[in-house]
Length: 183
Image (tube, rainbow, N blue to C red; front, top):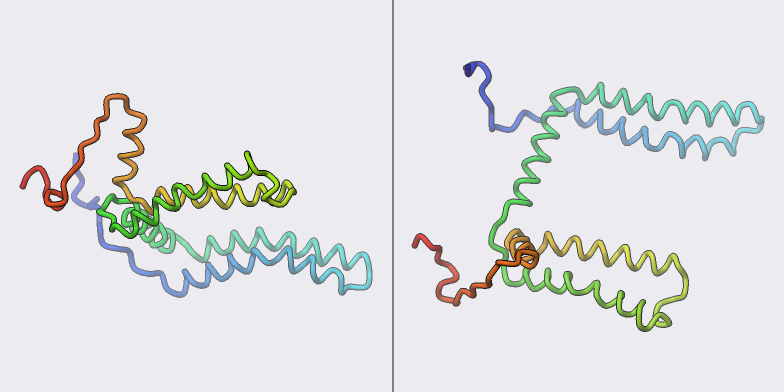
């Protein structure tokens, strides 16, 4: 049933080195192909060559993306996957949040209420243009979502308890704060 040759390794895969950095470099360079073609076409005098330059740079971008994937290869893929997973587990795993971080998170959590009330009840305080209001709303929505991560994993439980009818609040005194139920 269990094959002894299929052991799961928790150690990080080796950094692919030059292949990784070369593949990422080609990928980043491919993102600039179309803008480069758009820029260079203005310096070519004949219409045929303008179209040729733009078409060439437009076609080379996706090909370079495929080449970067080939350069990166499986070792780079495994290394990137491990690094992202390690970072994800380190950031998402619930742990105790300091009082300062919690306070900053609460301020960030409540801050988006201000522009919503201003737009609703005092719209003249914000410049009367749709795109400015949209930008302000997007920024404050981003602050709100970021606040949920700043507040930490325990806050997610508190937020979930808001939507659970049978949830009860239990306050812990300062001397019991460091202890667990098993102590």
